[in-house]
Length: 138
Image (cartoon, rainbow, N blue to C red):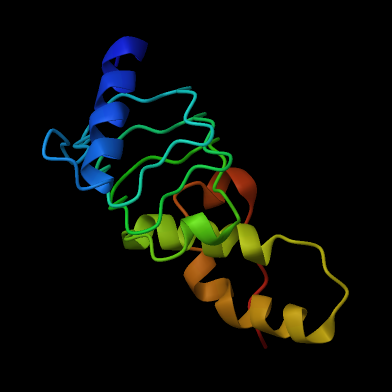
């Protein structure tokens, strides 16, 4: 998607969020957003289903309430702040996040226990053959 076109969609979306009658909810369903600079973008409630977000910069993006089912997040940055809470995802994305949680190196016994418990789900990650299986709880 062209940068100017994306910028216009985001401007109209902000108006929609502000209840401006000229506003339009962002429909980025299936959009090619590979490598897009969405740093700080307000995507609250946006439709991003099937969007290609590989290598997109989502730092400080507000994704709360956005629909990201079937979006491709490979090599993208999932924002770890309150603006990414309440995001609608599909199992593929949930598994991908679980896999990354399970691959954290943490000495805390409780974290390790939950990582082992989550391993069967995490091992369904679409890139598990490339990245390696996680040891499951005994």
